[in-house]
Image (cartoon, rainbow, N blue to C red; front, side, top):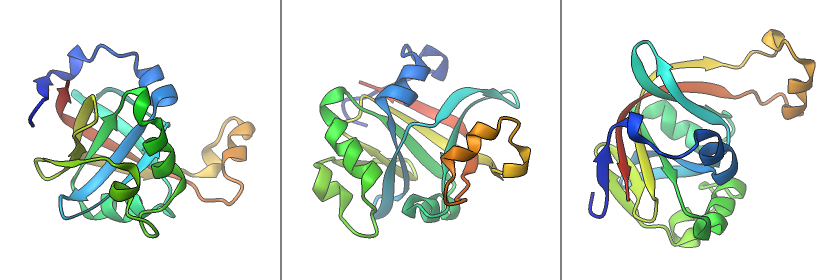
Length: 167
């Protein structure tokens, strides 16, 4: 990808708690001709099954859910603060209702079998390894339930990190 340099996942310099929880990410899935993205601030990076992985959470009601269910790969895109409005749009509006690329001014770029964004400063490409639906009967802390007033529990996806591209 033009303007990006591929690095090893172990060489990501950012604090991942800040990167995901404060800066947010765009989870993007689909082909260059047919994709969707959504803003997320829940997830993580780590090691599982001897692989560098990410884990993300997507509610079945989200349009991106349809794409991640049908595709094997997805990207996590991280931006500088100047793109906060684009992240807000992608978190509050559905790709079923608007053209998010047009609304945000983001430029999609091919990323192997999926899509990243030219304006991102980090693009992490992942291949799905596993999923599990959140089951409320497994909550050990009852306060977690407040995140689900509509009983719309997330599906957790674990993805193997197959490339990390940075500017």
